[in-house]
Image (cartoon, rainbow, N blue to C red; front, side, top):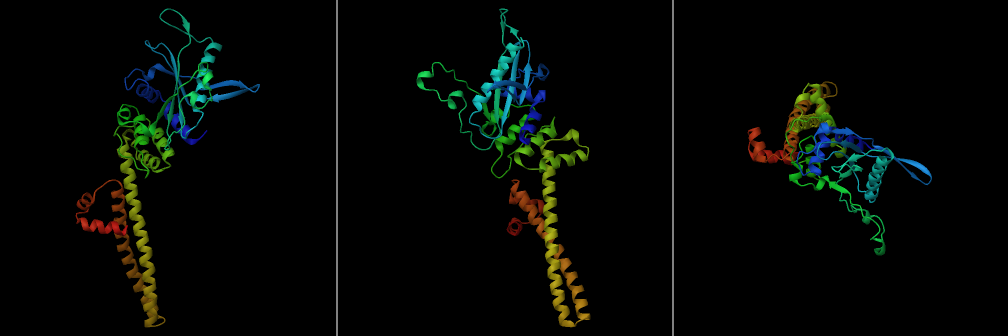
Length: 345
């Protein structure tokens, strides 16, 4: 089981997240399903092939029972990569669930008192960045000659590609899945996300772990862990996370600039000191020259380090969407100076 699969299932298993996903993806945002109406269902089932029993496992699967629908079985299947035969897999999952109802005498009764199976719904959530070029129904991955189409039932899977989700649907989510939807629908090729809702995260570790795993960016969990260490568990929002990430970026940029400047300055100072020391005399000249050179080198290195740190900081702020004018106002300097710093970064 891959890490991406684990993190997505962990978050979706929470009843408030699961109910929110069903309400948006099935009921177009209407609050029909409530978390307390959901109970876990067995994700494992088996089938017989080649004379042997084989197991299969769904991702997230729950029973839903209320006074209107009476009873239903709803599951989510998560895909990080396109899979040509996904309709066949989903068809097998749903078929197994109906077969289990028959094998275990699990029934519901309709308004006329008839004993019937309850409905099984599977929704495929695609989190990948490349296009899903495969079909979404059985006919797309099963060869059916025209003369047989009247006898081979087609099967359409419920499919949502997160990267293509429109803003209206994204804005309909109320749980932490809102942050997930914003991340995948707004994630650009440079690894930047254009804005998050500033909501308090109910499941911050699971939400940030999922984002970090799919993006390959460890800074989300690093920022979260730092906030936890400062006992800010009740104040975890994406604004706090991004503020901490920005603070860390600036700090690292300054430290890198200081280190590079000091190393360069010390190196140049030692070279100059050695050269001057040799000119003034073997013992005394070398001693004094090296001392003076080291002193000058350290000073120059510190100055260059601070200058380099500022340049790196400006570069980070530009990448986060800050204008040159805003940065110039912050530093109380001219825009030309900021442009100069950018050219040095």
